Length: 201
Image (tube, rainbow, N blue to C red; front, side, top):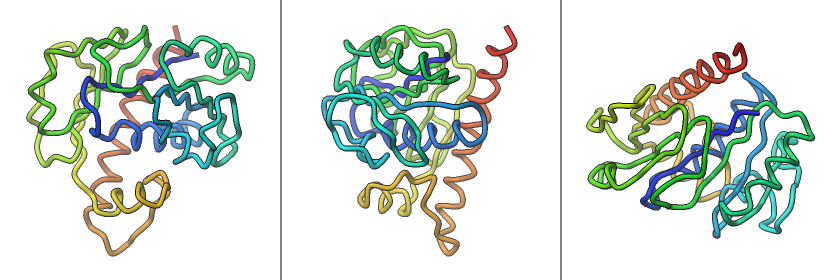
């Protein structure tokens, strides 16, 4: 099972929004996946329509959601997902200076967080850099497998306020959301490449 962590040292960069949307995409298009909410404030589980009670629950689209509230409790959730024979565990991590061991670290920063890149350590085989709520690529990481820029979308902000993963939000009259979805699918294709590459090995 591949461990994919959405992480960074700074809060409010969009990690939770992307983790919840990613697990839905992964399950639909790549491999059966579950979400682990390792944040003390379990917003990812709420986006997946799960109460914040610790344990494993069925979320949106019957995606398994494990609420653990701390990275120190990842192992039981990972074992539960392995017993379910899931192909991937998407982990929403709280702000931290260094991640637990991951297969893929999706490092999500916003423009104000770029200055903290050097203070963050992703312990992972692969790193994908995401510059969220930005217009151009202004962040580089020498070891990154890929870098993706996600534009700001008012539809994403409204979806989060209504506790809906933004991948499920649809607004044909919102050009910014169309741009966001295109960039998000670009991020998912990068994840998919790594997952398929690892599955072949």
